[in-house]
Amino acid sequence: MNAFSMINVGEKPVTKRVAIACGTITVGPAAYVRINDRSLPKGDPLTLCQLAGIQGAKAASQTMILCHPLPLDHVSIKVEPNPRTYQITVFCTVITHSRTGVEMEALAGVNAALLNIWDITKMVEPGLELTNICLLAKMGGKSGTWVHPLGVPNWISQIVNPSVPLVLSERDVFVITLSDRASRGEYDDTSGTLLGDTLQRYGATLIGREVIADEPEKLRALIVEVLARSSPDLIVCTGGTGVAERDVTPETLAALFDREIPGIGERLRSDGARYTPLSWSSRAIGGLIGKTLVVALPGNPKAVAEGLSALLPDLLPHLLRIAKGAPK
Image 1 (cartoon, rainbow, N blue to C red):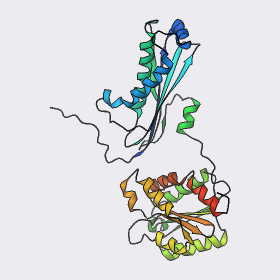
Image 2: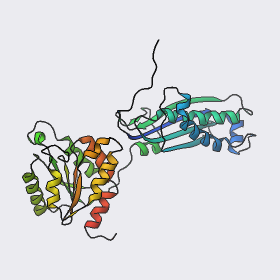
Image 3: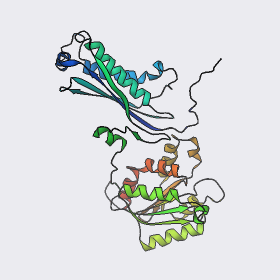
Image 4: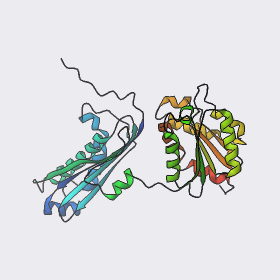
């Protein structure tokens, strides 16, 4: 006898997941007028369908037997009537922080909303039709962002490809990668590249980038040189924050700090724990040398991306502003 089971997602990291689905119901001219002026005997379908769509998304795992029950952070139903075609299009957006996606929840929300419009409208127009029920976009997880190849409305594009606020404009940044192997050219410095590219997307000016071995003397000398030469607003290091014998970044930086900022490391670890409990083994650190903010992130590219998402767009700009003497 065949054994049935849900897919085991227990080993996957928790990430932010977003899914947006849509569908359309054609109601005809007579029913459209009644819907629009809210004169149907059962009530207002455009209001009720939004409530039904939210409930439908929440109940997805109850109607699809192998669908994981997920804690949903957000569900919204958007309704767009079209008086030219006598159609009503429903959009469902679902957001969660979980180990698996919410595509089925978004589709379930759309279906529930459309079926409630049908139920309320059927007594005045039995010839209703549901069409174009589909997934429009999804974000998160291993596959990243997917957008329907036939295109999506602009408001959906802004959700899945949001514009990045230029909160680091007019800030000079220097990036340091600590890695024995990368310094020997055994592999590309993907973490440093990601770090520099991301900071520039937020408006920073990248004034330099260096790859050095995991050696305290080299890191200390490089930071002293960079501070003397250009006095950047921000120095970000990647690598050397673990517990291996040659992971010496935190100790080296702590000896240089005029003031340590414990909250930086605490924020990085607590936020990283949403993705993996191994985040608590990181010794990420931050502090001030004069008016220059120095932050040390882990060396893994994925951890760099997650770390930056914890510090931007709010915490880093705030610290830089205060460090430079701006009012709170």
